[in-house]
Image (cartoon, rainbow, N blue to C red):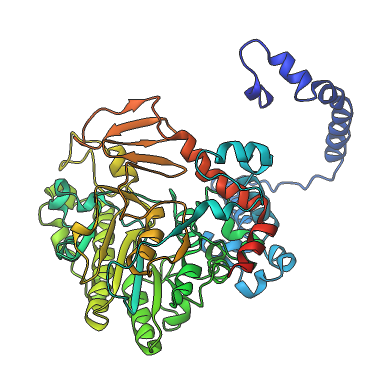
Length: 549
């Protein structure tokens, strides 16, 4: 059955014998059967421990129940590497960065069962098996590889000149699951992002309502933003060459070229996804994790310190470190994530606006309220941080986005009984950009965009004319007919998702979903192939990048 996945209709036998070594597999059944017979006989020959018997039925059932429970606990004790809590199981994200510097000992720290799970969860991607000739054919229409074999030259661009006076402070704020849908007028009665809307209402704030993230989950999204190439689920953040070298498309590397000190602030541990090592490798001068800058034992979720506590500590440290050097801060929060158990009222937050227009039956659903209130809390914490930045550093260029989207609108509830989540609401994250000298008329369109447009937009906003930089995508100062990621595509009329081959018009939001539809497939494949090429040639490409620094 497993091998049959390669077969088409009536050629199963042909595929089995000629592509999957079927003859050898059948011959292998002979020693395999003998081994199973020997092992079974040996197992049956082992001593049998007698099971206690009890005449009393209560004791008998109690003993059997206790035995089963004990075996389940023992299984999870070993499964979680000597703990009974999933939260504390030793896994790759909990191995300290200093240990990861030695890959042998770092891997040895992970429990064997967890290590095996990691191996099966991360099979070798097909794209890594491509030959150079295959890659060049895919890349040629969009990113032709020159004769010297360096892909970087096809990504090179030249800045047109600054749009605003050079800011001393730049902030790229990435909120966990900070989705676009709650900002839509259709869901205003939920009051989830009222404070965030005040920031967007500023005449100098630019916002884009249809904005695609670089990943469906956190790791590929933040990795892509930092490296300037799509991670494409290849987990380049976990590959040693990327810890030791930089991509020429790297966001911190290129801002350093413009004279900025670069700092990463993450609400969780920097061991998560090897973020600390990867960020340093990509060019960040400084990296700070929530547990490092917050008081000891600061309350946290399993991902990181509560947003308002982390952002307060980060802001204070930013102020303490501020000097005459221009600085770029990438700030990444964690709290807007399940299981939504943050006791926000305990910290002085009153989420009453969330429930004020909800029907009574929805107000009684505690899990739903916890979900909505956590989202509201995230918006409050992020917006308060932005307001502090605007007051303390008034020249700041501020970009606010989400790492990806999540389903937060309660579709199918009493409030929205006849609505279903649209493709746009499911996949589009939020984006807004502010500077006191920005205005909408600087941009040819503000309808569509993506994470990969942020790096070139930042550079085109502040860089002197003629500054050379590297980017996969054009900036928002250029007209965009469409945007593409490894997962979805978006143009002025519709949004689509490659995995399901579905598409849906952006307006009206309840338009029917179309099946077996995909656009810009060749461009999507080229974006992915860029990453595959760089991963396969990491030793030479990252060295070439280093030589060009």
